[in-house]
Image 1 (cartoon, rainbow, N blue to C red):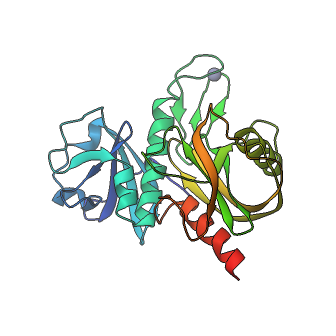
Image 2 (image 1 turned 120 degrees about the horizontal axis):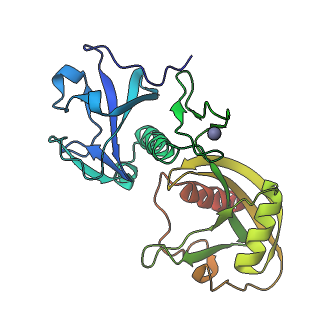
Length: 268
Ligand SMILES: [Zn+2]
């Protein structure tokens, strides 16, 4: 059973996820703080919300919700969460994403959305509860589809408005209320690229904590329609030959894995 608000024993080494807004405390060598509280130069945690969020390599993980630009944590520095993705340790990145999502959840659910009463943290699961009207909230997860579409020996890639300069990726979009994943996929692909797809195959998923998506990854094949890139969401897009792709997302991202799978499947 989860006891979210328990504290570690003084001599228990643990992973520490000190989150401030969308940033996380990293050591000088860009790693997560690890160790017993007695050995770490943390401020007294009595003034902070501390939440046990799971285990990493058989050690407990604790989220500490820090203030914006908190300067009581003198060892280390607050860095964007993406810094951990670059370090390509996906287990740490995933747990850091969980930490950030819980931090976000707790700080945005202090009051009940139904009756306005102050909410209390539940002590046996990660939830906030209103004792006035019994409304209970859980961290929000937003399902998204992401799909690698091939046409013969070509792959559809597009440049989103928020992508880094010159970076191309595959199509993605949020699932709307009341939609199945298949419906969301067909709608997004039609809206963003004007085409129809077939042979849709589910491949894998990845939590994506920017801020609380769950990316569900598919491969699919072009079935019809002329390519028409939606100018509201995308800068540009086109079919690219498998052996002549522009820069695409790095290893560790679901987009990278799906591109590899789509191209590999054709090569088989
Ligand atoms: Zn309420």
